[in-house]
Length: 259
Image (cartoon, rainbow, N blue to C red; front, side, top):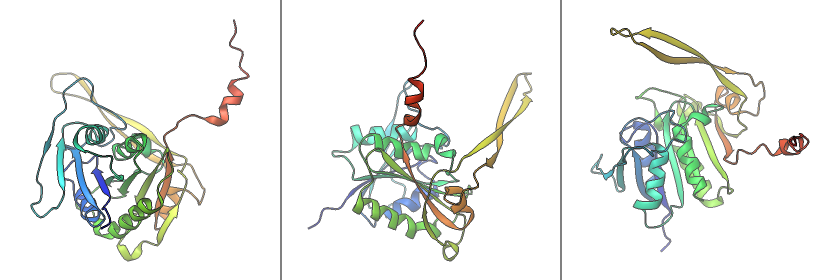
């Protein structure tokens, strides 16, 4: 009898998030599922880990019909992966999937994303990692429209493998199932957030701030994740976590550092 793959599932929206429940449903069709997810929302935490306070991680049951083991963690998405790999699991998972995030993680958002940082942490551990995100921030987002794509992308990753040092950043457009045109392998668009700060004063006279901003896509290429999403495609971007700018090393070696 063929052994089922062991699948680690996590997210950054919290263990009760509908996107996570949809991802679990799909993964239960593909293998043996272990869920380790934050006990509260951890969006935009990036690759943060908990060092200055204690971590708690306890078994939990969300749905009696579920056929997987599930743990609620007090830490960040990266903490969840670290605890799963080093404490909870008795063997390395065959794949780690993170999401389905409520909101886009395309382009520069990959830097801030807790969803993607969990996948990156898996990749650092030598585990194939995929982050899934839907471009809809609503708690009532339609995840049914993307479940077939989640399944086929994960099946391909299990069958073909993901190159070492690489994880996949998958984003879904906010469309109905029959409106999605297919899957595009893309590069990350050159885009950024132009921040604005809303400064206010509380009743005690202390200033406080709300961060906000406008997302600006400066990339006109038709091979980017932003183009794919705007044109009705699922974007798949291979992301490397070696941040070395290798093309710059030769130039930097011409600098004169001797005094």
